[in-house]
Structure formats: structure tokens, C-alpha cells
Length: 210
Image 1: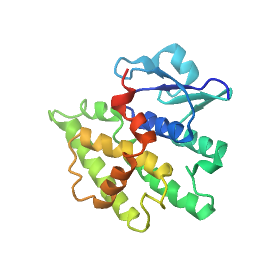
Image 2: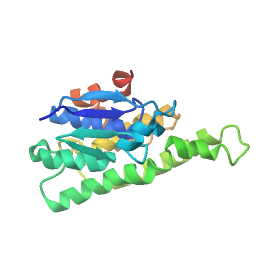
Image 3: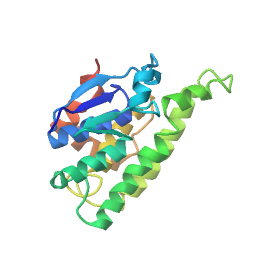
Image 4: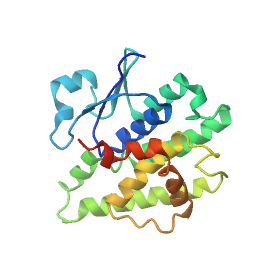
């Protein structure tokens, strides 16, 4: 495999997901930090690589890949034995539904550029914090109900999948914003199991911070 480069930001949930996936597959990569707070994602060089100006971007096997879930599914197809996605079609649908509930329903509403815009259309001093807490806890409660339909140590089954790769960064983000997670028993049990695994530990923002 040619050199693998991950353009990421240490605190980005989407980048956190891809770091976990790469670690689970044992793929060594070079990390290039794109500082979102400094606006580096809007530089001409980075926009040439990723026209959306988002992170992460993964360069692997001569391909430039964007969108974290699309990247993870690419890695799952690259290494089907990894378990990132179930082998059966119904299992894959269930994992996608759980992952999408986080990555497509919670995360976009709570992205930094969305939350920053909220502060420009209201005079409330704590508007951003209130916005984040409301949508994160609402989304996670719905996810908790979804998880109740499945058995196993992890979100779907007894091995971590793309669903868990999305769950752990979202819980981390919830804690950052002071969300009360105490009633989300299943989510916290799964997160606890995940965070004991080396692939998840090595991907943690505290480890990825430049």
C-alpha cells in the first residue's frame, strides 16, 4: 500500500471516526493537521484537495477520498474481514441506520459552522451551548431507543462496527458541551467497551492533538 495521508483536525468528530477505522485495520498513516479554527480548510491548496473544505480527507492507494462514512465504507470493502460492516445485507442496513442517525441527523446540525451561525441570528449569550445540548441529547435519546432493538456487546453484535465508530466521537462531543448522558445506559455501556480497545484509544482527540 502506498503512503496513506489523513488530513484531519484533532477535535473533529468526522476525523475521529476515520482515525478509529484506520487503527482498527492496522493501516499506518501520516496525519496532516487542518486547523479549522484558523480557517486552514478554506485555503486554496486544501480546497483543491477537498472542494467542500471539510475534514477529513484521506489519500490512499492513489485515491483522494472525502466524507467520513464514505471513507469508512471504502475501508470496509478494502478489508471485508475487518468487521467494520456486517457480511449480510440486512446487517449492513442496520449498521448504516445507526451510523447515519449520528452522522447525518445529529452531527450536521451541531457542526461548528452551523453553531457559529446561530450566534449571529440571536442576542442570547449562551445560544450556541443551548443549541448544541438540545440537539445532541435529543438525537442520542432516539439512538438509545434504536439500540434497544439489538443485542450484543456493541451497537450491532459482539464486535465494533461503523456504528460504534460514529457513536464514540459523538459521546465525546456531548461531554464537551455538558450534555447530561446519565439516562443513556446502553450508549454508555457500549462507549465504555469501545474506549477500552487500543484502536479507539489511539484515535482519541487528546492523542491526536498536534
